Amino acid sequence: MESKTLRTIAIAALIIAIGGVTLGYAALSQVLNINTDSTVQSLNASWNVHFENASAGEVTGTADKGSISLDNTTVTLTGVVLKAPGDSVSYTFDIVNDGEINAKIGTYSPKTPTFTGSGDTKDADETLVETSYEYTLTYVDGGTAIAQNDTLNADETKTVKLTVTYKDTATQLPTADVTVNGSGATITYVQA
Image (spheres, rainbow, N blue to C red):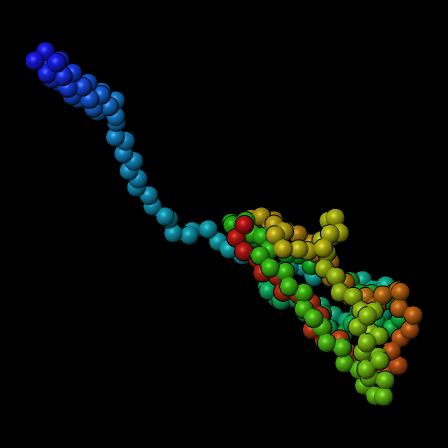
């Protein structure tokens, strides 16, 4: 009987101990709540990235500089004639962020020009000019090439230089004129 009583007391003590642990755990737990209220405000800031202020152009060698025209989003260079190795024509213009939102170049995509010759030497002339013709677009400040992720902060202006060149490493000229069309690039600015 004593063993049965001892066993009953042990079981009762165990039940009380488990109940105490449970009460202790309950006494040490805490519920935390987080509530939020937010408003996403409409866009009141302006976006205005564009071209301005084309230069008169600069000629190296015997080239004809042609002309440049620009509107807000397009620069067009026409009438450039490169006559000898080392000839180049350069124009500067501004890329302006008149908006209130910082911008960066999301994509910079150079265009692949076409080379169109004529006559019996058409193919050889086109190949010769294609390997000797060069188009560059660089920042005037520092001379680095324009590239993806370049920034243009709100109220900032960067002056760039567009140059077309018949490389001075060319050892000959085409037999007949070769027209170069489609040289250039597309620059897409996005929010920084």
